[in-house]
Image (cartoon, rainbow, N blue to C red; front, side):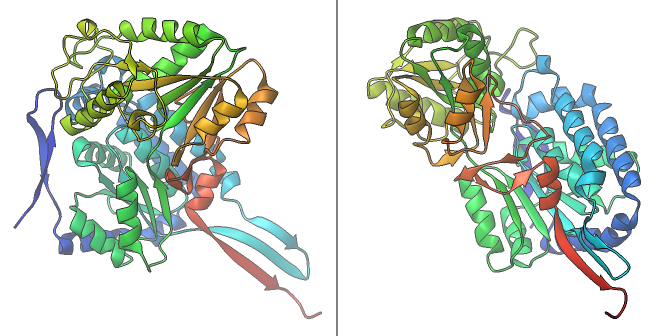
Length: 462
């Protein structure tokens, strides 16, 4: 019996797209084709692989007029923001620009006696399991450097953004990347797990939930397949007493609310020095109160629906539990009559929160943020580290040395100063604790998508 994947649009609850899943035999044939194509792809000159990937990205960007409304239908992001394609170009272009140096062999000795070097070899077939919240940005993080490094890529996208992988593959194929070198596939969980257990892939990159990451690890157990896992987050902001409050509030509220709070590195909890607490909260309420919740195709809309009603239900539950425990909601529901109890969810700021509340402890992944006053750096560091997650932390101060000193003590993957919710392709995108393992982009991203191979070549008797 054929199983069909269905994308239910959060805009109106309709079935926006559906595709049949590949049966196990068809899936194995597709992966076998990618494996057979890999040696010839890796044998192409590096400059040619880079050019083909960059041409594929350009072809994808050329589809923007179709892809932006398609994204709004699939996951609800307002069309006014124009999709994700500026970031896609930035990341792919940067990885192409550093590829020659990042993939160059490390030469230990090159004399008349010995040649000793460490080369970077592609893993082979890379499996990318991409999420729905930023379907093109998250996928390109691995797709572009994996192809550049000489791997072939099999992409499986989330059902909520069912058409994104298909569109990426179409763009890359039109640019000249062979069909078996980069292929999109529709799989159910059972077939995915079977392929992992069979060691069908040489590297797996998964972006998604903690439970999803655990399922990937279980399925691949004993195969020794290297995994890259970017999982949950509960990213904090810390506003120090010397911060520019207007700037901090503007950036942190954008980090908390953009994409309806559905950002991997979105700001979910904020700690403010008590001397600036009231000022920061007032400014934050002013900013969030001006957001416009509504249909993502309306040019005035700044907050679209959440991608799924169950995601919105979890945010409502966390918020209601916090209020019942004494938290104070500061955003007036009368400003957001479009909140329908389903996918359309109003933004909320909470004060009077504690770490006994789930909203300050569990991943919310929605437009709600709790704000707490702290006495000093010590208290802020303790609270920021009081989390099972560690992706990013956003520090607000005029003192870079203080930011670095505090940052060294935070259990996180990236420390920002006077910035939030941004992925710099020159830096390793990584996390710790339940956020996962591995690292994407930067030189380290290339190293994770290849394996070291040592050459010890003795040229003459000695």
